[in-house]
Length: 200
Image 1 (cartoon, one colour):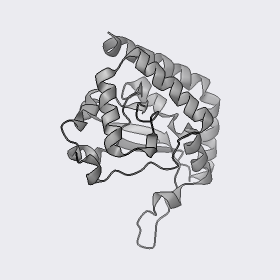
Image 2 (cartoon, helix red, strand yellow; image 1 turned 90 degrees about the vertical axis):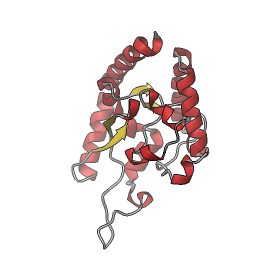
Image 3 (cartoon, rainbow, N blue to C red; image 1 turned 45 degrees about the vertical axis):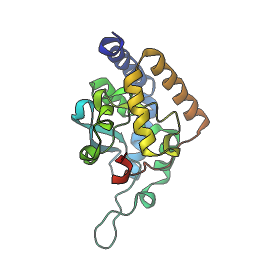
């Protein structure tokens, strides 16, 4: 009953509440990013959701679009703006995903959605992370985040899918709040996944 009805209801209610409460912060960041990111405050990217269905994830833009002499984008670490670094450190860049949650593409808690290019790389077991909606935060994010290997993260995601419950989601929620407040275990950039990370 929780996964089939109440989880979605709670996601929608909390997303609406969060959007209303955080609207002053939301507007302030949009204005700041509009002035510092060439009028582009949002970063929109296609990600796989439940059952691998592609949706458009929205975040605040934390990197500029600077390129080298050959027209290639510079490495991520060189493109993060000072404001972007602050947004990532405080996790404020994730706020727009509340609209993804309200729409039903995402949940508040669940496996983080990775790039769609990784879909062919998953093992059958790793594909189980897509049996539920992806989340803004998840079990892997409150248990090591970027301090553990990707294979460990995938196992945590699958464990979450197998043990999903209101109690588990509540634990993830409060642990996430604690990590944001203490700024513990928060990485500055989203690490890339390699083919080797998917191998058993």
